[in-house]
Amino acid sequence: MLRSWKVSNFLKTLYMFYANIFNYIDFVCGLLIRFGIGD
Figure (spheres, rainbow, N blue to C red):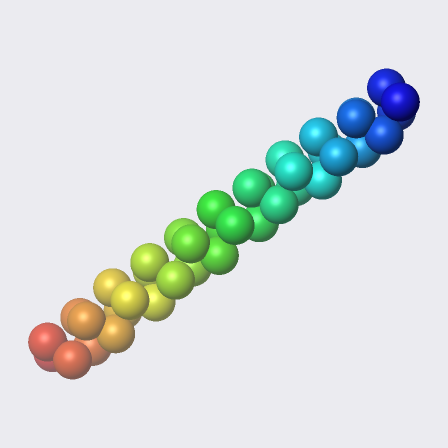
């Protein structure tokens, strides 16, 4: 019981970590495109 809770918690943390990375990449790409068009 406790182990499965730890695993699900770990997966949730991992998911949040990757979601943040993808959001950051998306944000940076958006800025690059915006400045690329502005140039």
